[in-house]
Length: 349
Ligand code: 1BN
Ligand code: ZN
Image (cartoon, rainbow, N blue to C red; front, side, top):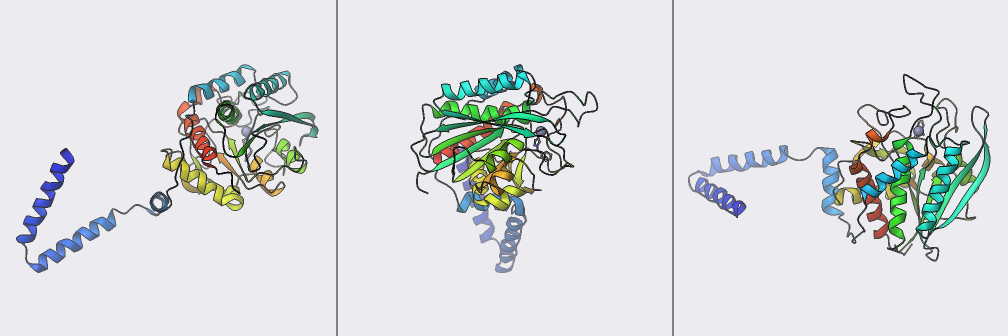
């Protein structure tokens, strides 16, 4: 009601003005109004959002609701095991719990084991966990996250040799994917869904090439199930912190631009544009890099990067990466976007 009243008032005023103006001043008014409209046009970054929303709006099916509280509890549970450092009992216990959870949700679960050597010469047995849903469906989508945590806090000012809790890096990714798995048991998608939990991602050294992501590198060279193929993949890393920002990361742009566009546009359409930025960030050598480069599956990385500081989240690789920095709203933004993407996926290739 209010809006209509205002609209008519403005219209009346405008009509009144027109009657009382000569032709010259009317043209000036029109020019001025056009200039105001032009000046109020969104910036180039916003205009790409507007363009996406206006011209390319996707038809979205009803997806199940992602439960952030349940997802959060999966982080609490992982942290209760202690740091999930490869080669420790805490790591084994957490692995067994993840497998048990996935099986309870009806997945066919495999564990790919291998002995790998880290950059500092340690030989460690790894477990990549693979959970397949709807095996009869030929078109498949791969979702992944690493489940191990870093054995040291080298970005901290204290206790650098002690392991980090790893609430965001990487319990958050596991927690989002387990919550998605929980939904899959009762709500089939039209495509097959394969969830991969990579091991030994985080025992690397930035000075040593290919020293991170050892579990995914091993899988990419030795895919299991043999001859595994997926239409595309989405990897999650550090997806639970407060005020998370997910810019469009360079490797994802290079290898999987179509997937990136679909995911970001979905996020914007369902109201999570504040997290998924239409801004580019530098390439990151994360698990998705090897899945793209070696396994040839177009895969994106949803990864927290604060572009203004050119840094991951503030507590990255410190003891501050604990439950206090986790925000359920971030888990919801990522989880709901992923659910929307996979439930929207059609069975045709
Ligand atoms: C991501 C989270 N990574 C480790 N924890 C991999 C990585 C390490 C990516 C250093 C860029 C730099
Ligand atoms: Zn890390």
